[in-house]
Length: 69
Image 1 (spheres, rainbow, N blue to C red):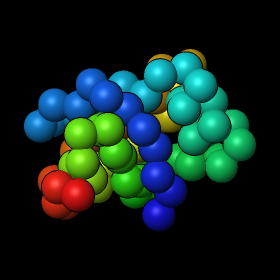
Image 2 (cartoon, helix red, strand yellow):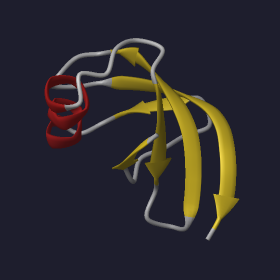
Image 3 (tube, rainbow, N blue to C red):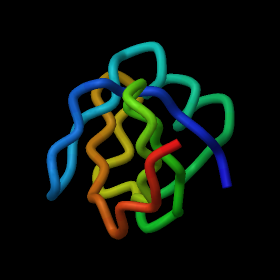
Image 4 (cartoon, helix red, strand yellow):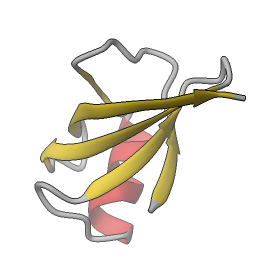
């Protein structure tokens, strides 16, 4: 699974910033329902699914809060 950094994660989901969104959609060519891993910079990992594959503002839905590092 691909790892993305986003500090603004809530329990339901979030939007990746423009740089991460572009990398997710244009470079890695991820589609809706593809799973990714998010890191919030506070030691918590999240498993998420791509909901809206927009290269400027990709929306993801949190599936599972994994652990604190």
